[in-house]
Image (cartoon, rainbow over the protein chains, first blue to last red):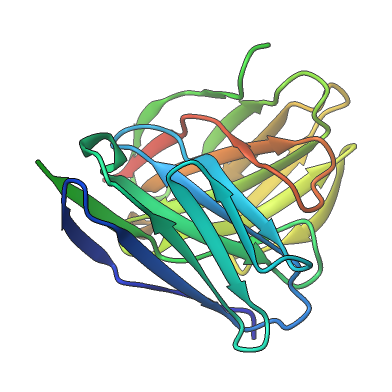
Length: 112
Length: 113
């Protein structure tokens, strides 16, 4: 069945350190992998995404890497700042299209 | 451009009642999808609508239903509420519903007593 596993569920890092969140998907036909950030009490917002025809994408301090063979993708945040504290969700398309399967989320805490 | 608007933002119901939630998508977006968010479960897909047609449905009981109007506004209904239905219900709109960014509303927080 379709499934997206996300680890870790919580992550605490010191300000300035890097954070890595990993997700594994089950559907080998998946071709689009977004990451959403949800600050406390706010709506999820897309921060970066990657399509299956590339292995890595960067946007300033954040990057996403994709390993299609292993069916996993990761979010990398460098030089973390307190405002990076939030819950991060990975997602992959579900079967039948027009829907996403989300991971269970990672609560990132950046300690000042 | 106005964002996705969901109403009501908060509501409290008792078991057995029903509830209707509303979502107005971003202008020009024809796809509206609904997700249930609970602690520890992440976001779980309920259904997706495009041009008034439901194109996909998640693994939720028939008590959960939805519809979309000709102006792309969408509603979801939950009948015979159970305690476990307490959650944040998020609506998201997108241009086509195919791979691409979902724009979420702030959600409707439902508490069932």
